[in-house]
Image (tube, rainbow, N blue to C red; front, side):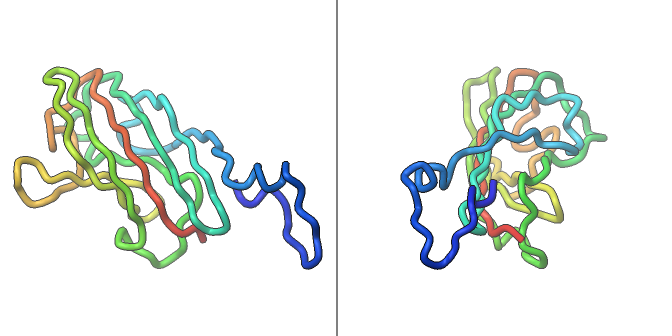
Length: 151
């Protein structure tokens, strides 16, 4: 959501207008090569000026396979062109429902998609894929956020 109204010199803002700044908007992520095995429980974002913060809760409804590649979803608002993952910040965790362990992840943007990276067992960080940082199965959860500058 962009600002809910235009600002103009000399305008008087109402309490309702001020309260609507920063309201969360739901959206449905599209694309992503895991779309056949995920249920999006929550995807929402807020945009204030050009700062976008998005939050996600996603549950696996099936088991991803090696042919699905890295986990990714689409951005709610296009990122400022030319930036790389260093221009975004975010984090969260993956919860393994079979062991009740959680694993930290970083979220980043590449192209028009949001990806996750993890550092499993002290190894070098790597993109989250079908078997890293865990062997994924139905019921596992992703909870993460990302903050970046909009185009």
